[in-house]
Image (cartoon, rainbow, N blue to C red; front, side, top):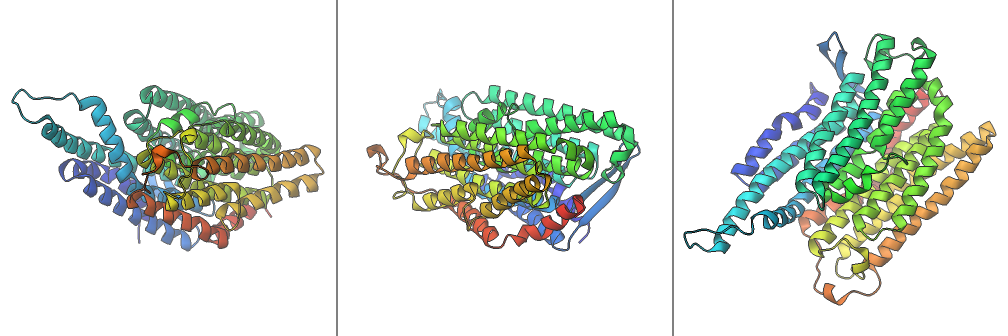
Length: 518
């Protein structure tokens, strides 16, 4: 098949207006199934392209910026596949959750509607509600497609300016999805999210410009560290790491994340946290470790220390939360610390473990955010203190939540075990080979952070699903099958990857060995 990656990236953008029209003219079901079918098709062709090894496409662009292309290799393939798998699954999950959200927004804005013709207010409201839900569904799924396209385009890019454009594109729909459909002070929080991530992107662009102008090209294939002046390469690397650190929500630059993930509609939280923020780690892989290896070697210990600080801060804050989604948001900060820790390991196993951690975080945290959505729709609260004993009332949700938590904790047979094991093996390997006491201390602190991770997740599971059931929750039932079926698929996927990690490692390991020259 020709133009595989071009299709996977641009079909969601080009056909997003059709999702909008279907929602308005036909209804929510039509918009949902169209979006699902389109993303499923794109996911299948992505997987097929990745099976044959490295696959790339290049197109004429402009002499000012160079070539426009897409690359699916051992680094990009796991990121790209996980992003589109999550997006496809969350389309189905979105239907009942977003209808619940639209009904809430409708009551907020339109409940006072009356007519002067004496018609029944209930009939008028019912008709207006149906029209409102259809209109908003079309808009939601259109923005969802653009968001998915921005994330995939970023990880497949082969040019610095192209990378930056897609990096910014994924910010725009996520901003509107929070501002329109979020909770609480959603518009203020969306502006905070936009400000932080846009400033990070501008800092990132400055690093790109410094490299591109020094090399004389923005194409990845032309970037050679030795051709960049020594003072420029360090400044550029720091700018890129800081810009991507904002997207990662690493410690110090984490401020926006708890607010954005807490306010975003839950299907979008399940993309922001598991998929989008980890793209910052992809950028460090591609732009620093691959293209600036000597500078990476010099800065690697800084990444390790920054990672440990992020692990502890996110974990400690998660332990203090009562809001289910804010707990998961701080957990995401902590998990990005694991990725930074692995990125700084200077080890094939450590780097491969970091990428596997992205995969396992996407699967585990996706499950936990989807659990939060079921609780919001079926129980009506996000407060952990108001929950308890729900395992008997919501058995499927409880099992999926436990599998998600075990994945984040790194417990076999989930996918989290292999990622975490490789991560710490690589960090210890480098510490022993270098005889570096600081790296040994960071390794030990990283192990302590895993205990913190287990603490807040086990405490959360105990308070939500076990113990005494509050009397007011005696009639609670498990979620809609539109929500449960996607969760079950994701839960099955994390166990399959845990048992057969070579699904991803067969591509990841050769890439990491090539990058480090092993």
